[in-house]
Length: 59
Image (cartoon, rainbow, N blue to C red; front, side):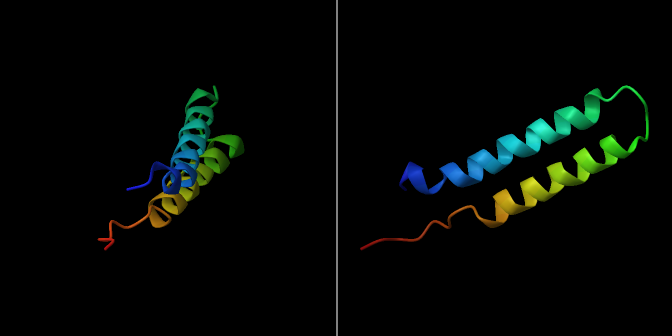
């Protein structure tokens, strides 16, 4: 499979990891920033897994 088809999904996964890192490093528990970053991370991961290219046989 061509690696260039996977790059957008990998970028979304990295953005999701960055958002999760922000959510975990917020000092106060239960702040709005923490919830927003957690939902943002889940959204990025969901988009990444939905946009991951399928393995199809090419003739």
